[in-house]
Length: 444
Image (cartoon, rainbow, N blue to C red; front, side, top):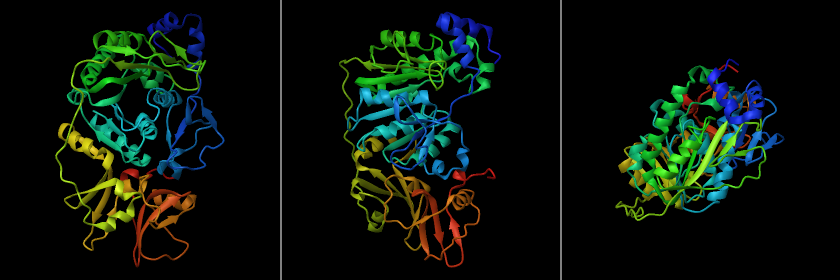
């Protein structure tokens, strides 16, 4: 690996007698890891090694072809670097299933940390998953759609626009854009883009992002700051700046994991000590102050479901509000409806709740792919279980040949019991409703 000399010097200054072990580790192959979706139980990776700090995490002995696995498309797991899963341990320490909290994932794409947070929240809580870079919002939406949690809002806003919503979030995660030193062995382009001047640019950008969004954090709320880089400028020095300039206290997180390194105000992951990539993470808490806490009493009309036939598509439909706009039906958990109505006045919202579908000319629902993926989809919908080859054919939108004759109507295609998408069986053909953006394009 052709590393910049100034990076090597920085490493020796930082790690002293462990520097050579660190540099040797950068030459080793990356260990692939995944995180299971406990809301979509399967036997996937049942025998693989568990990640120490994340119950659902697995370190894989080899890297399978995920694109060919229907369970990946069903949202049974997410391919995520294991160090990043430490967020699960942090949440267990600072939140521990506290009800009705509001969480912001500020720099969310492609969605690894957002899917993890969604799994950690109770059903009365809200996750706002934000991505400012427009061409990255689509992949974020796709991954959260696969994950299937309904209490999620996807937005695309600058941190300053979110910061204008003062004292709103209980937790804000800023996985900041950084110089990417922790990605050197995973992404060789990161080496070419690295420079000391780029570090300074990253620091300036990180400070702007943090300054802009901190007003949205509630008094006594938690800020989780992380980077995938090693230098102290983007890590410890940024935390020192946060604590002094923005009235935040650094929280000491106890870590029963000897392979992790505690610095003066954060936790470090080094590739010669862990099976994952480089990471720095710190947790801070906003000091109490005299600003008024967030209060909002929305004015809205309670929506009554005038189409009771829609109820059959959802578990616990009484927990949801049905909203019709033009010919499209959406449902929102009642627990997040007020927040959604408020936030849509403030933010550019791309996705929220469960897009249910629209009624055709015969007053029959054309269900969405998001409904097929949802953890709230009723068990009573008609299902058609496929074997591996047939499931792959469905995901490639190839002709689907059914072994047994079935009646006409809508069917949820499943693999190992998990939904993949919809078909509609007609008298003389089968229509595949899998959206093109979820289709497997590669020939398997």
